[in-house]
Length: 156
Image (cartoon, rainbow, N blue to C red; front, side, top):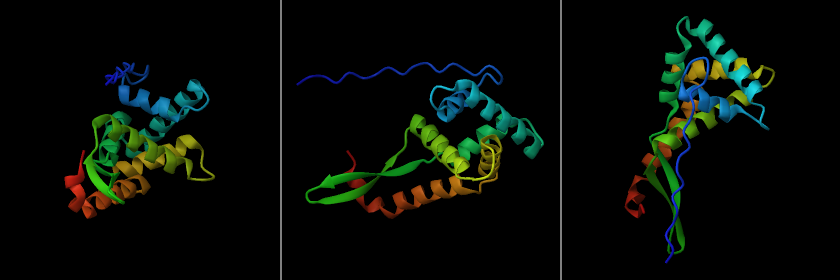
């Protein structure tokens, strides 16, 4: 039987303005069609607006918002016999960040009539205050895992 090759993680370079790998990952998550300068403008603009909304340094506010949104548990489908069970599993650190980014960006894009930078700042501010759509999504994910903890023994 052939061995599986495990892909090595690519090093993430910190962004230029804040020297933060998390901000750099947010920029690449927002980027569409290779337009990195546009994504940087959106993220840096959002962080500037976050600074005025929170009346403090935007980087700790951003990091706290991310920590608030990160899910610790999720459910994965597992087929046993003829039935499919939703099995709760712990979320790895990288996937926590990816899910948090995805939820925040999706809900920011969903705010129609608001420029993306402003929408992202508002979504991050809501997450910082432990409210808003991304927090609700995290809570729903945790509730789903809690409701299905009876199937935790099907873990692989």
